[in-house]
Image (tube, rainbow, N blue to C red; front, side):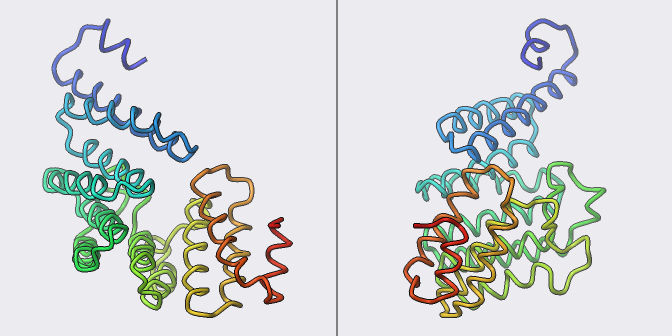
Length: 267
């Protein structure tokens, strides 16, 4: 519909930019949906289209958001240098977005990319920058619509995930637990609204507990992750839980682990 309007309708420059921005956001959403469904090649095409449309719209917000989501796909599929390049390009647009919340989100995403690449120093710098930027964030209802999902709890989830990637297990657990421990309802991670995301983060917390040798906490958290994931279709979520099951399977001699494997149908 947007493409047809751009091709066939008559309008001024301002409307044209808004149409290109709408096309960019639609393509970005399609890219994220394709990635979450395991269709990475299709996601690449959608993200590339989104970035081109964002350039035509001269819209730094949708461009930065597209680059940030595109980076997730790259660091999750092994292109670590590409992920860092994408998120750095996103950060270059941060000043033009006028949003401390978005700037914090981009730094948190940079933290994830650097952590996946094994760069502890760069990841720590990005984590600190994310938390500092968030101190200047205004009310979420007054902020950019595209960062409706990002609050202090989400920042801690992303930083905790990065710490886990870097093998900083106690720090990872601390950040994961911080997501709901000391925040107002507006700043706590909204588990009810994002069941897939919460299941993924719980699986990461379970992995951290397991690596620290706390098998009981790992299994209890793993059960919570599986329950949260029930009814949600997501290749990304399913793969995360499968990875956790494989790690737990190495401890199948522990009764609570054996019960969990039986419960989840693992051979």
